Length: 588
Image (cartoon, rainbow, N blue to C red; front, side, top):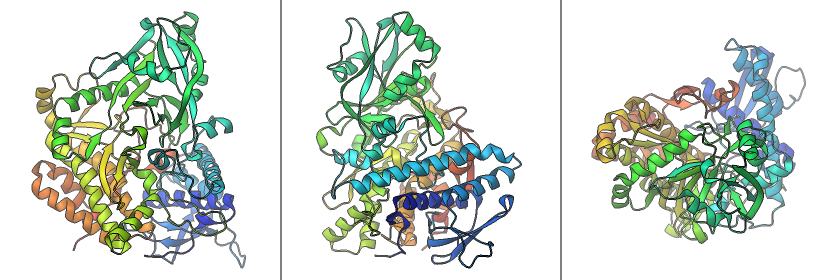
């Protein structure tokens, strides 16, 4: 196995470990989005911030072909001291953000909000690391599904503030944070039928789906149960439209009730191992860059997507790729009939992971780094992925590097290939980043099944609309679904190509499981074979395999600019940059 220097994440001082992790994640995003060259492993990266008169030296613990660099603790140069003083995440964030505001002609103070979010995120990382170190050896989540959902202690590896959660108390964060293994009962409202809105993909009664979940809640006769996240339930009582519903007797706050639900990696989607469905609750708390309020247009898109899948694509997937499925957001409910969101909008999602059997594991959770026990030593395996690859190596009698290559190839079979073929066959494209994808692992640790979730991320290529209309007339009516073909390929190039596949290769390399170049060759060979058999995927596969640059979402610049990625036109919700394409350079 490839080795690397000691990981600052394992430092005995949990506050220092969190600071190091936050600074390294910020720097990884910064160098990607500024096009900064990173020297080879073992050398020092020099970063100049003229707007602050600051120069930093950053040890490169691991240089990554895909940008998944690992950094040591930065120090400040030019102070005249024999030993350069350390630069904590507060200093790094202030200097980087100032450079990114003034360097683009904006006043420096406009970056203060972004710096605050970076520091808030670092504090949350510290709380997560401390909680995990306090657990007994072998402690995990209540089920394998939830254990993976609760594994993202550090968060998105290319986001400057991946664990930023604002406007919640510490008690609320303990309950609603998956990393702290939180849980809570839902807050229930009773709505008069005339105040209820929503729909199901098959025209069924949405209230009938919710009544079993509200068992034990004192629901007034003739009313419909409407669930809410407890944080949201408190916040929306100040909204005028909700106050009017309550004053008119159309909405009755009932308070918390029923069994506990567990937040998943997205925080707002909740799971109960014995429930028939999962719930994607509206949550106006600002998390990373966005307030996670469910919009009714998004919820209608989920229902439309479920109908579209049922018109033919779902059966085709079952026949062609029986080990892959899409979790539908197939129904939704809210209170308030004016058309404006009230904050009670809830999507109802498939839950095939009941009872702890055949469970899908969030890919982001599989890749997420673990901290050591707190004595300076490393964990037995850096991640759930590393443990799975080690199991595969033992079972198949191979090296860890060969097992990692097998893991990647199996992953492509159960996840990437079905997604690409779905787009080729029907023009339906998705946003399969790591948090939106799940896999099941066999006894040998290799992927055996895959799932996609989240109906916000649906695209239909414009050229294929006539075909879809023949399958399901009106499929694209009243929803934002149809986009230019090139735009669809560009977004899939980011979500599947960069965020998912190259992100997986980068994580494997950073965790010392295999050489990234060897994994890139595995990935390239598989995509080339697919290109030979799927002519209608040539646009997407040509982009992934041959384009010198790919369009990449810039989470750092989006954060600096204060954009809410869930608001506004899909073309301008986030900052996008050009990123050199390592797959185009990976030739035999």
